[in-house]
Length: 298
Ligand code: NAD
Image (cartoon, rainbow, N blue to C red; front, side, top):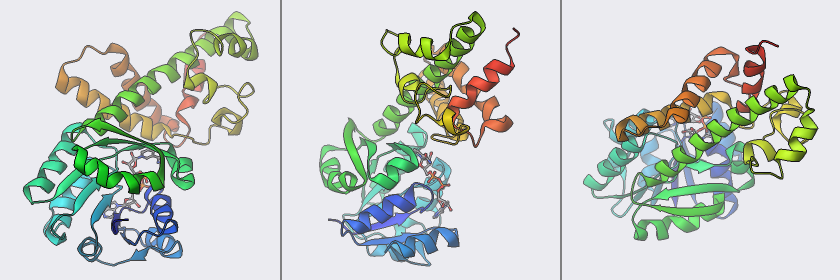
């Protein structure tokens, strides 16, 4: 298995790096936050105080950072990660970032003589801990084949989506569907409540009818019908409203760049931006139902 520099040991990166260590991969890790470094050290990661020391030892440089700006500046700053890598190194970014930023990051790595892949994930912190993430990979076939075994350790599903940037494209398209459908399901429950239809009756019908979807059958926004959904634990995430707002912002950027007429995608982005700016940032995104209920006039 290729030795790995792991840059960004936060909520996702910490457990992902721990799973690599458990599988016998040599992992050198770095984070700007000391607590993240301490937790990684306890999980067997060789933490280093200079990220360039991690990169110098590694065949794969995996970044799991908050945004595209973080990734680009980590690659480029002087001295950046690209300056310390060995010939043949693969730069593997698993953060969720703009498609154009992912392509820019890959181009920077390639211009410096290295190879690159974007491999954003879905599955959240629970999936990161369990090693059951889904990876959506943008890379050429040779790079995909080389990173596949590493991704298999951290994930349960690895899909080659196409060239650089197309992993991010798949992630953004999926989350645009998810944001829109979660709002649709929440609106239907509020309408049903006002019409006198019970949550359970609506669930029993729709979960076996053409309105069936993940936002209903896994992430049901009302307590009761799906006991494991965040609604049953006061909307503890799950997938936080702030992350949905971020991903829909990335989707909107892509819609604008491509000139796509996607009214629902843009509306969902605006709805989640407001939700996250209010008290929704730290709640599961299915808590949007409370905003819809509050704004409704019985
Ligand atoms: P996080 O904020 O917990 O972790 C990011 C880490 O990067 C932090 O520990 C931060 O200190 C570190 N960092 C920032 N700049 C750095 C630098 N220059 N060098 C080294 N470390 C640096 O975020 P997270 O929840 O782990 O998410 C990481 C990425 O994964 C994001 O792009 C997010 O959108 C994506 N993602 C998150 C989830 C989720 O459920 N949390 C799910 C899917 C995808």
